[in-house]
Length: 146
Image (cartoon, rainbow, N blue to C red; front, side):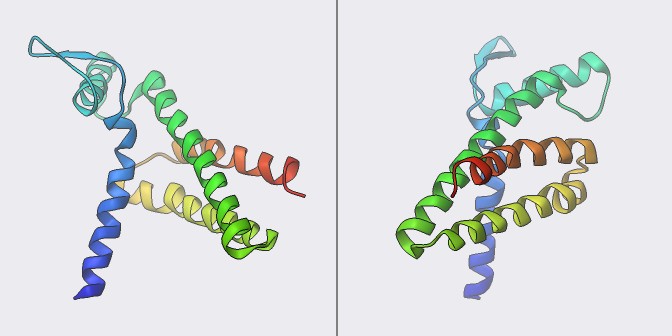
């Protein structure tokens, strides 16, 4: 029973992280005569895009770029956390490479297996997300870690 509760909490935490860009959407939208921000404004922007291009899915270049900014921030946060853990907790550079490799494996699984299956994400979007996630990590490893 405890294992099931832990898995549910992990699943809920993962789902929450997926909606962070939606929750922090800074632009306002008008819904039924009322100006709103955050997740309601984000969802309205998605609907407006889909109506404009007559599509059932997709978020457009502007919202796509906005979401990629969060991937970039997430990558930088992953680098900082991995560096702090490896240096202060484990005390070695090997731990840094191991932690960053774990991030690469998890995000690769997420972008190329989980998201296409769960959210019907196109492979082109997975490649774009993967590049945005790992460009900072690779730059960090090759230019700053010695």
